[in-house]
Image (cartoon, rainbow, N blue to C red; front, top):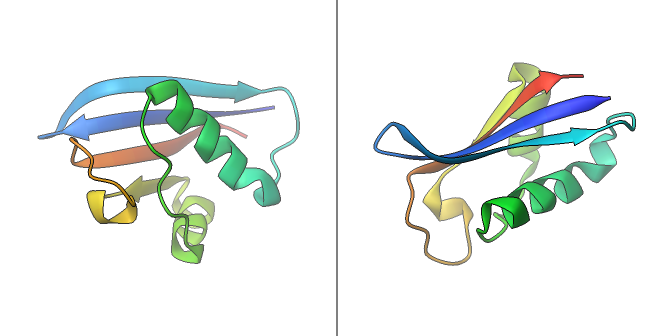
Length: 86
């Protein structure tokens, strides 16, 4: 079981947030699926996922996506995914 807290921030304020939960075991190969599901719930486009994003999440239990990580323009400063429980 794992939970990921996804939140959109603008000017250091949380605009929207969602908690992604799954009873299945966390799989690194499915990280993009988790990201896509969170973005769908937040009603935003899915950012481009790089190895550095995965390494940051693995090492710090947190990853931040900024506007340049998205293929389309966004109206927020960052998307943050944070591990709650793994």
